[in-house]
Each structure stands twice: as C-alpha cells, then as structure tokens.
Amino acid sequence: MTRLLVAAGQAASVSGDLDANVATAARLTGLAATQGVRLLVLPEAFLTGYDVAAFDGPLRDADDLGSWLDPLREAAAGGVTVVVGTAVRRAGERRLSQVVVRPDGTATTPYDKQHLDGLEKQLFTTGDHGASISVDGVELGLSICYDGCFPEHAQAAARDGAMGYLSSSAYFPGGAHRRDLYYAARAVENGMYVVFSGLTGRCGDTEFIGGSAVYDPEGRPLARLGEEEGLAIAELDTEVVAQTRATHTMTADHRSTLGPRVRS
Image 1 (tube, rainbow, N blue to C red):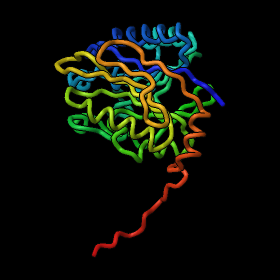
Image 2 (tube, rainbow, N blue to C red):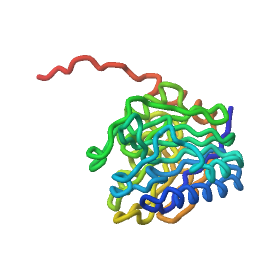
Image 3 (cartoon, helix red, strand yellow):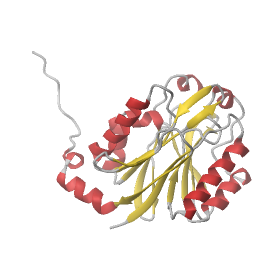
C-alpha cells in the first residue's frame, strides 16, 4: 500500500510571458511543498499561456528545458514532482505538451496532447503516444484537457497499470457541467484517482473557469476549487484503488472487441 499526497493547482497565466508563468508555477510548487505534497499538477499551456497570440509566437523546443525552468526546479527541490502544460516545438511541429519537473532537477516533456479541439487543430499537431510517470512508486497516466473526454484514453492508462490520471486542462465559461462529468466518469470507469487542474482567470482575450479537483476511484471529489487561485489537495491510496477494482471489475472485464454489429 502506498499513500501519495497530491495537489491540483490553478492560477491565471499571462499570455506569452514565460518568465512570469514559470515564477507563478514555482510559487505554487513552493506552497505545495510546505504542505507535504509530493505531486502537483498545473493547467494546460500554463507556461506559455493558453492564447492564440502565445501559440503563434516563438516556442521553446521540447528538448530545450534549460535555465529558463530553473525557478521551477528550485521549488521542486522541496520534494515535489510537477506536471505542467506548455506549448512547444517538437521536430519542427507545434505541440501542446506536459513538462515534468522532478525534485532532483531533471525535466522532460514525455507527453503531447493526442486530441486537439477547436482552434488547436489549426495550430498544433497531435501526439502519437500515451505516457505515464511514476511518483513514489505510483504509476500515473498523463493527459491534457480534451484527452479526458475520450473514455478510451484514461482506460488505456489504467489497463497499462496507472492508478491515477493527471489532467492539465483549460475550460471556457459554459463548460463546467461537462468538465465535472468527464473527469468524475474517468475515475469511476477505471477505479482510479483523477487529478484535474484547470486554468483560471483571464489569459489574453479569454476567460477560464478553473474547477481544479481530485476525484477518488468512485468518482467523488475529495478536494475542489472554484475559480480562485489555489491548491486542491488530497491523498491517493493504492489500497483504495485495489479494493475498488476488486469490487467493480470493469477494467479487468474490458473486451478488446464487441464483434460485428447486427442490425435487424
């Protein structure tokens, strides 16, 4: 049995101001560290800002995770693994990605968003693989916003061994109903925790609605924010995942095919 203290963090992001957004991420990471949090998830495109002007501008290469990330590295050294969204260039293509910063200072971009929505389809290309990370021995699947609207995305992580699903997201006004249904559903369908981090406040010309939350394997919110800046903190317990999956066996009972559809 492993227990892991996690947080879904949210704050406003400044369009195109990488330094300001790294500083905000570092501040939230430092706050999380003071409360014993071991994993912090931050919103989609948080470091660049979720804004067309930022996306159209110059982007860091996915392999260029040097000194510009140092404030976040320093904050993560307090014992927190940070997962945060950003737009990057990878092999000449624009991607919506997640940066993972570890307490030892290492930083990677292991995952690019696989489902693009709206204007994203004109600006970015899709990622070609799923990804999971391990924190204190707990495997956790990575996802970015619209990915979480597809049951098979979270299911693939769960079937590969993930006990949690980490979503860096950005929801617009009017999307709260769907937001709250999607991520609770991904939790209960797979008997796993979901850590959902939503961008909040104004970025460029757009408002975002936050709603960061941690859901238990039954889909119940353990911690939740409205639109305020802050951290939603809760504990993940691998024994609860095991018990839930033993009682509700959807993950084990998954069929690779349902066969042909007969119409009459």
